[in-house]
Image (cartoon, rainbow, N blue to C red; front, side):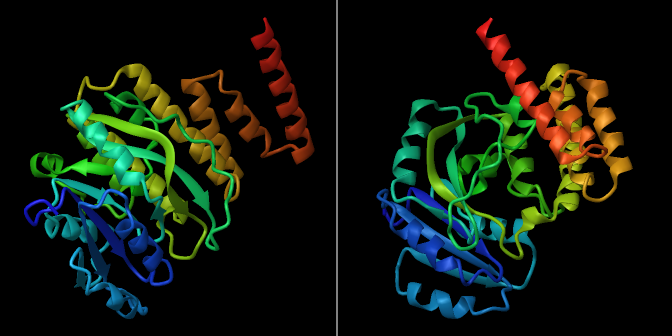
Length: 315
């Protein structure tokens, strides 16, 4: 470490993830970029996390902190407060990194002084570490990203590295939010800093296991609405009307898909809201058709849509 202060502080927060935690910690300690510390915050776990962490405590690079259960925003903020690096990299306890992740990301901060956040792409695996097909996500962007970020969060949380001055000037995670805390932070920082990314899957995102926050989709949608409206109100004129409309249409589309399993009437209502903003969304029409037509019919319509798109390209 440089003068006993590392360049990068890796913050890992955990709650009852003892089964995954060693893989995450090992992946941080095994980075080819060695000037780092690893700060682990145990947010009131009731499993054997203390036992799992015991072998790591002899490593001078490791700080282990226990706190009573306070929620993910509080735990992440505690990690930031107890870190000393000029940059803070985040790693969820159920994810892990490839060895060269930090080494490939850190040089990007030196290319543009205004860069505040650097991220990368991710691989997806299930609870047993088997590769799975990633959902279609929005294309990652660099530079001034607010116009794109308002539509959807394209930054895998465990891929992110943040310049410490970002927290010093604009605060850390909002303890008033239960979910979408990362998207809230990225949006706030996007008003002041440039973002950059490495176009390679340098981290592994684990999905589908019990306790994962992203599974609580309805709550996440409510919190996302709050984050979006609050950001737009706090930054009038920063986002174009076109981008705001696109973001709202995308939000209603997600609701249309979600409510298909719960309430078809609600699903149709959100579908119509999305189409009222952007009537040319064939994907929304297909979602709405699923509410009333057999799966085979929807598949047939998808084939027709694909062939029509191919014909247009040939022209």
